[in-house]
Every structure is written in C-alpha cells, then in structure tokens.
Length: 418
Image 1: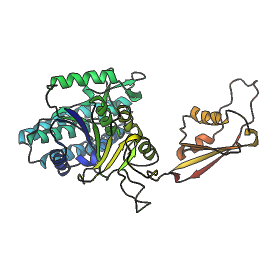
Image 2: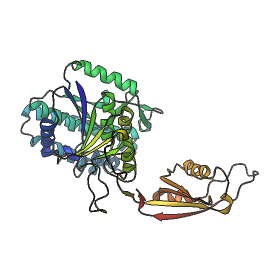
Image 3: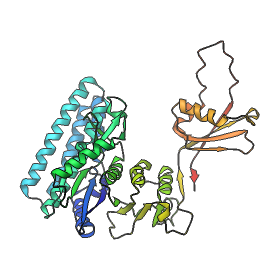
Image 4: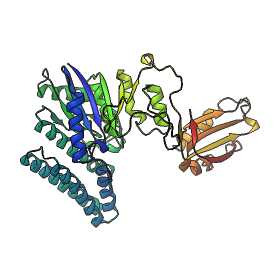
C-alpha cells in the first residue's frame, strides 16, 4: 500500500460543475489497487474567491463598513448554497447538514467581526482564523460527494494534524513545520481510521495550527504547500498539483505565443522559474518534496488526459536540452553602487547587501563588474525609495564616518532570467 497526494486548487472546486469534474477525475484516473489517496483542496475559487471575500470582510469591519462585510459573508454563503443545490447526487439530508455547518461557521465569523468592530482593527490571529473557513467547507462538500458515490473517504481538518512552530504567541509569525508533532498526530489519525486498511482522505489545504493549538495558516498559496507537506508526512510516492494550466510552460504565453508545456524540469529549475514569475508553484511549495525526494506533477483539472509537467531530481531527468524555460519578472529596480574607491576593497558586496538587509529589503539578483568598481543589485521596485534613502547617522557623533558611496537607482522592467 502506498500513498499518492493530489491537490485541487480553487478554480478546480469553484462550482458544482467543477466539483463533479474533480469527482470524475478521482474515479476515472486516480483510483488503483494498493493505492491510498490523500486529496488536498483549496477554498472555492472563481470570481470572487472565497478566501478573498473572507479577508475583505475582516478589512471592511475594521474600516467601519459593516454593511459591506455583511454583503461579503452573504455572498460567501450563497456561493456554497448554489454549489450544494447543483449536486443532485448528494442526499437532501447531507446537503442540509453541510448547509447548517456553514451557517454555524458564518455566525462564528460574525461574532469575531463584532470584536473587530469594537476594536476598529483586526489582529493577525483573527484574520488567520476567518480566512481558513473556506477550505473546511469545500473539503466537506467534496468528501460528501465522494462518499455519496460509494467511495470510502474521510474528512480531515488539517488544523488537527499540521502543526507550525512559532517565534512567539502571535500566530502570524509562524513558519517552520513542527514535523515530529505533525507526524505523531497524523499517525494517530490514521490509526483511528483503521491504519492497516485502505485509507482515503480529503484534507483541507492552507490551514494549520500552532504548537499551542491556535489556528493559523500557511499564508497565501499555502494549499500547494499543504500538499507537499502531507506528501512528506505520508511518505507518498508522488504529489500531483491540479490547476488550470497544462503544466509548467516554457515561457509566458502572453509574451511568447510559441510557449509550450515542459514535460519535465528539475526541482532547482522549477524553483527558479517560480521565483522569476512562473505562476504555477510558489518556491516554498517544493521544499518538503525535495527533502523527501518526492516527484511533483503539475496537471490541468480541465484537461486530465494531458501529460502535465514532472518536477523531480536532476539525476532522473531524461530531457536532452539544457534550457528549461524563459521567464521575466516585472517591477524591478536596479541599484548601482559604484566608485573608484571600491577597487580591490574586500567586503564591499557584503556591506552593500547588508545595508539592504538592515532595511528588510530582499535582493533578487546581484552582479558585480569585473573591474570591481560597481555592483548592481535588483530589488522590488516598490522598495526603491527605501533603498536609496540615506542611512540613519550613528549614535556616537564623535566617531569618524566614511563618506557615503554614490548610489544611483534605475527602474527597469522586466528583468530577464534565462
């Protein structure tokens, strides 16, 4: 018995029609003997997205626009009710039960928003809690749909399994996965579900808990990350990310009409492509899969027979071409630090990058001229003014200071990464 993880994004579960399509994909393409499935789902997508509406309701309440917040929550409710009404396969009692759960959760959200209204501000913890309800609803609906079709699937709230370590009690500062705690909780869950038998799971993406038990999230685009994390925890043979494109493209089709879907790329190539603008995966998504040497597949929910793209180790790469793809990134500023006094002086690059680090500005690309008299650092264009602002003077006024280096900021777009 081996595990395979499949993650379906918001566009894949955006409506009753989409949910039925996901059910068909699972039944026709994914089920096999000696195979256990873990299906990770996002909140319902489409326009507007459920997660966006939930977060906007928090912001609206904090801005004293209670009417807008109420309209947003009603739109969220209506979106799910319409999906339930479109799933004739579900028994009436099941649809009503899920509807009551959604209504109960929405009332809990309204209670939280009342606190936001009193404070006139939203704490990160409240935003984290409210934004995670969408995944629980879509996962419950898909689980019920699969069970109604005669399959044995269990609903899993990731907050009961996935733990994140935090710097402090603030859930918005959570980051690293608490692997031992998460593994222990998952093993206990599988044991309760019958451990040795054939387990089938539908798991909420995006959401998690702190090691103290407080609800939190993996931040935006966290559902893909959830799939990779559960792939590692389950020791899965493969992780499949189902989205609305035919895999990783060789270039942006809006700029390169001849772009095509790549059959395979390495982990390192996929991370670079994602960092430099590819919209398929966030770089952090791949980290657990890389650590566990689990291949990732990017596939199209609306073209399930398509080959998609395999992301794996370079040693398994069959591609003959050394070029994986061509990407661009927009809204980049290039800082040019130059001066004859830099020639042969050790540590100049360290000093320049360190100055940006002290301002909490990330360097996306760095290049130094062979003459050693200039350094180019690419950063987010929105931080260009912060980067060019003179540093604060030292507290000890008596200490001599070096003359400031000349800094010139150029705004360029796009920057090209081969």
